[in-house]
Every structure is written in structure tokens, then in C-alpha cells.
Length: 410
Image (cartoon, rainbow, N blue to C red):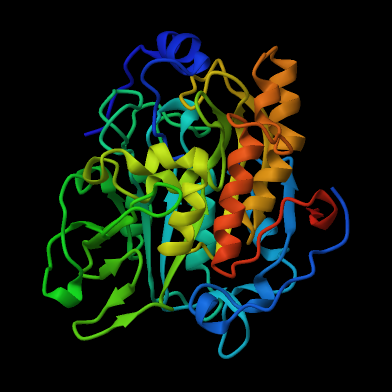
């Protein structure tokens, strides 16, 4: 059954969330120049995540697209340095037998979640693999079973969705491909987020969240989903695909696909903030949400599974009052961007898309969205700390504007 939207936009947007006071959502979640010179990256760090050739500070941008057209296909087909499709021994991101987990934003209805037209086009591109796609696609997110449009967390089946057809939910997209005989499913981690489990290799076959011992320097307690899909595939978000005796880490590929919007407490929801939808707040005393401002999402990425690609939905953005967004509050930009570097992607998008829109909307908090900000409480402050966490794990990331190359896809 689809979930209906409560009439909370005016209260949450203009009051609690816009001021940053009171209860704030831990919502899952955001130039030209010379290319970044990469440091040496140990193979063990990135093996099974993406080929070394794919790493870089290039932002690929497709404009004048609404997700229903061929914009996503052109964007992914225009990636330079590595092919989206992995074929044989050639470098590539997605192989024909991979399990692809698309991490979306699902906590909010209307324009607060990832555009489902974009999602549908992305899955279509995956299953159109030239060698024939025999793998599986999982649409997933953890709305933390709290806050959100109904104050009960996320949903993959909202009645009012971010799409041209405002009834097309993420679950509808999964069902569309399943009817075509494709292994595509939606897994709402909210349903698992209060259940602590062990890993498959500890003989625990239950669905839930694995919680590691102790807190990191950012305050994050690492936790992640472990579950079995409707097709019988056993997935550990951190360790990979379990075959009954071993994990295949390289077979599990994550595509991080959030929507760009403002955030009442953490200023910007983008690629980094999106990873708030991968740990469990409930099992860790809100440690993930409280760690965001200290770089915790960088810790989460580095200590679980780094995405092979980040795709930022900027078809409709929310320049004020986020992370929830009504249809009326959103601003249409008809843009989609992608990068293997989530920090560079957030830097470019916040500076060149979200802030100008926030200023035009009269958002007095636009200055706090500045990725160059250095004061605590600014987006730039915690984005820089997140970048440092990735770099500590030998994962290249940059906020140097001169090291971010923009490639416009015709």
C-alpha cells in the first residue's frame, strides 16, 4: 500500500527545519580547471569498488533533462576515463553479473526524494548492458523509521512522488522491471533498522543491521544493513555478496543517487549526506546523525562500502526549507550530474546550483551552504572533515575548485 503524505510541509519547512531548531530530520540524505593529480592508492583499498582509472575530480553534467528522456543514458555514456559497462577484462563500473545497489533518498514525499524518472532511466541503462545483464538491482534507503513526511521514516511507495507522473513510486519502478523478468527489487531498510544482527559468516541469516564495536573519532558508530533479497541474494552492505561459504566483495556495486536540496541542520543534502541512509540511528543512540557535522559520513563511506558512482538528481532542487519539500517549494533545474568523487560533486553542485537558487529564493541561510565555509555550522566545515576521513582511508577526494573539471555532456 502506498503511503500518503501528511499535511506537514508548512510546519516542518517554515518552522522546525528552516530554523534548525527543535526536532531535525536525520534525512538520508550535496568549474573548469585542471584534473586532480591523484596520490597512489593501494589496490586493497579500492579493489572491488571501482577501477583506479575511474577515480578523479571530474563532474559530468547533463542539462535540459527531466529523467524521462535519454538524458541519463547520455550522461552515463559520456563518462570519460572509464566505461560505465564493464566488459571482459576492460575497466568498467558495472559488470553483467553484478548486484547493483542504488542508494536513493526515500524519507520524504513530493520533491524530497530521488526523482523516480531518473531512477527508472538508470535501471534501464543498467539492464541494457551490452553483454546482457544477468545480475540484480536493489533500490534501497534507510529513512531511520523516524521523521519524514509521515514522521515514521521513509517509504519506497509514496503516493505523491518526485516524478513527471506524480504517482510513480520507487517501488512502482522496481515492479515495472520485475514484470519484464528482471531481478529488480526495493528494500526499505527502515524495516530492519531496529534489529541488530551478526554477519552471514557468523551463521546469522536474519535481516537487520550489523553494529561494530566502539565509536570512531568523528563520533560515528559503524553500522550497516545485512539482508536477503526476494531473489535469495544474501547481501552485506560492507562485505559483499555471501555465497554460503565466502563473500564476493567485487560483485556488489553501490550507486549513490540522492537529490540535491537544503537541509535545516546540515545545510546541504547531496552525495555525502546521502550516506546518512546507510547506518542505523536506532541501534547506535543517534550516533550517525550526530556525527555528520564532524565528518561522520566520510567515516561511514570509508568503513563500509564506497560508491562506484555518485549521481546527483538536480531535476528539481529545494533551495530552502529542506530536507522535506513540497511541489510548490521545489525549483526545476532539469540537471543531472555524476562523479566518482562525492566530495567534488557536492562542492560543485552546492556552489553552482543550490546556492544561486537559495539566494534567488531569499533564503537567509544560503551563506551556510557555502562549500568554502570554514566556520562550525557551515556546510564547508563538515564537508572538509568528511573529505579528510576519505583521504585517511586512501580514497582520493577534493574540494579544490581548481582541481575539479566540469564536463558538459551534449
